[in-house]
Length: 288
Image (cartoon, rainbow, N blue to C red; front, side):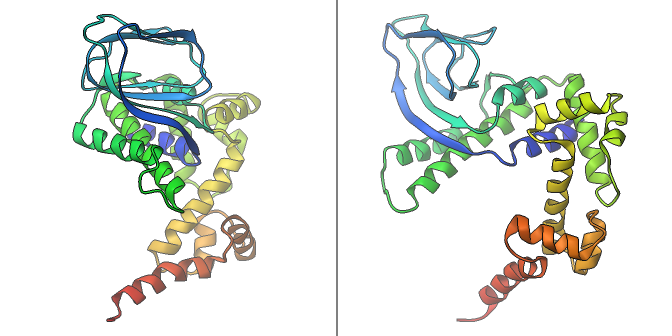
C-alpha cells in the first residue's frame, strides 16, 4: 500500500506552484504568542532550540529541537511560549500554493510534527531559501532559485513525513484512491470509463467524480489524459518504440490524434520531443 501512497502523492503534487512570502532564522521573543487565526498561507518550521506550544486545527503540539512542523493554510492555528527563558530558535517560511495541503495531510494521514532526518540537509535547504529571500546574489534567475529552494524544503518535509507516519493500515480514502491510480496506470492502453473506475471502489459514478476531483484536483478523465501524455513522454525518451506503437501503448489508438494532443500540450511534435535529449547527448559526447 505504501507504493500506492507514493504514486498518489506524486500525482497530487505534480502540478504544484508555490510562492514564497518570507523565510528567516529567528529567535522568538519571551512574550511570543499568535492566534488563534486561520491564515491563507502555509508555514513550515524547523526547530533548532527551545520549547513552545502550537495548535494546528485540533492538534496540540509541543515541538522539540530537531523537529519539523507543517501548518497548512486554512487550518486554525495558535502559537505561544511555554518557558520565557527557553524560547524557540527556528528556521521558518510562509508560502502560498495552488493546491490544498489540508487535503494532502488528511488523505494520507501525514503528521504535522515529527523528528527530522538528515538534519544537515534540512538546514542547508532552509539556508538556500533564506539566502534567496534576502536577495543575496540576485540576478535574472533569482525568482527561479527561490522557487527551487522552496520546493526543496517542501519536498524534503513531505518525503520525511511519509516515512515518519505510523505504519498502520491505509486510510480508506487513501486505499481507494491508490487502487484507482494503480489501475489507471496499469490499463492506460485500454479504453477507460468513469463507470469502470467507480465500480472498482463501489461508488456511484457521480459520487466517484466528486471524490476523485476533491483529492486530485481534476476529473478522472482529465487525469487519465494527463497520465497518457506523461507515459508517452517517458516512452519517447526511454524506448525505441515507433510513434504509432507509443500511441497504442498509451491509449490514443490513432497516431494523428496522439500527435495533435501531444503537440497541443507540450508545444512540440512527439518526434521532435524525442530528438531533443538525444541531440543534446550526442553534442555532449563529441570532443571539443
